[in-house]
Length: 243
Image (cartoon, rainbow, N blue to C red):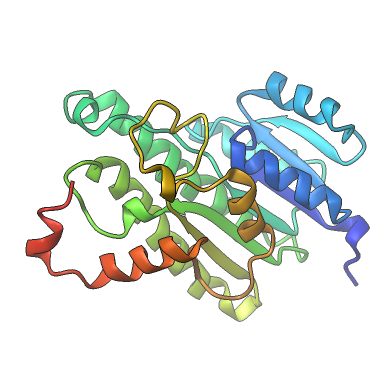
């Protein structure tokens, strides 16, 4: 029987604003958290600030260093009950069009790195405790749009991977959720010209993550739910006129 004290959460990309809010929510539930990121010093400062050193274990993890993922996973202090992939990287679309390294970095962070590490977690025969895998995706991946189609394509690939993984894990009763988020007020979007009335706080997204139920696609916020459904059915001739 799994109790709150032995529920372990692995957060990949744990230095993001949403991930940090998730750490606070998971620890408030009494869960233990393995917070993994390249920015370990910032994470350690965060953990100390909130007096979470007994519940949060900070680990170094590079989503783009695929060769290190197996060793990273095998050396985890405990096998996860919940895995959250929240790593993110954003490059302006116009810059990404002429900068292959920027485009490739988004692909590695959002898709390749996710597939690499989540495959290990999903196929681990030695972890009977795994109950849920959650991915932080984006509405940018719903339809290709000229202003952000490179970033959006990486998120779309991530979403489709999780959809298939959900089917693969269904016989084992392991849930897979995709948080399809709109604009988030975060350090990654700082300085971008985004519609203020559509901005969502990281804490709001984190609530959707931590309280995720059984459905695959979860779109936080009523306005973004409406936008999501409209984007899915819009004729291509109208989508082509969008920014």
